[in-house]
Length: 83
Ligand SMILES: [Zn+2]
Image (cartoon, rainbow, N blue to C red):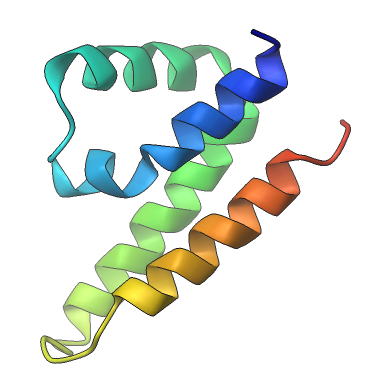
């Protein structure tokens, strides 16, 4: 598996990771990857800030799933670019 494929796999776990819904084996894998990959760290930082902003806004009734899908799609598109 190439490093780029690895990054795309990790980015797919972004939301469950932030939700604390990730199985232990994936949690370990994500944390280890973020330790070594500044590219993904910036993605996760962005997503965490984004999620916190939504939660702070108190928009409980807001349907965040379409937003999540768009953010993940944007991150994956960015991850597919050659460095
Ligand atoms: Zn990465």
